[in-house]
Length: 178
Image (cartoon, rainbow, N blue to C red; front, side, top):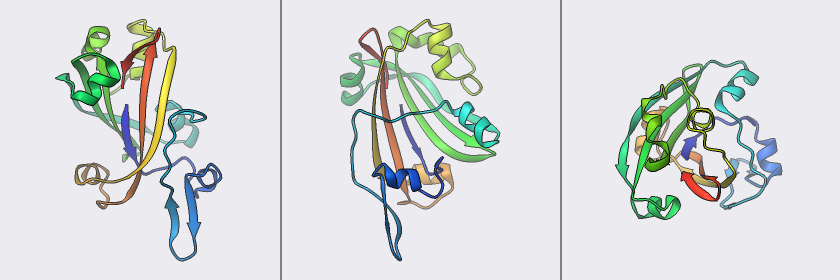
């Protein structure tokens, strides 16, 4: 999973500052720290759960869902040459907040292409329909800036600070989604 977003659950940055992701500079505002974490204490909530907590209406637009050949990085992460690629834009009250790019092992997850990916949780589909127990997750959170294609999706300026969450999910020690 790779996602870009600029709306935070912590709108004033207090929790992010405490965790070391942001610093505050007088006259400059919040500054994203150049730190990379590869394991630890990162918690990700289901999108619909977060939407309910903040009283927002969630929606998802599927931008692409197809079988693709994997580039070298994807082959290294998943150990296969082809994957199901799902690209979605997630919104709250009509405002784009997450760009999701997910590569799923074709040999484990091809059936997901038959599902309603605009209305179903991929996580739930993997567990309940494909019967793939999620046994381990690797996360990394990086700071980035919005590229032109992301800025267009989010209706914001190129170069705006953003977070990139990278995740590899395993079933029985085998990676099956990135």
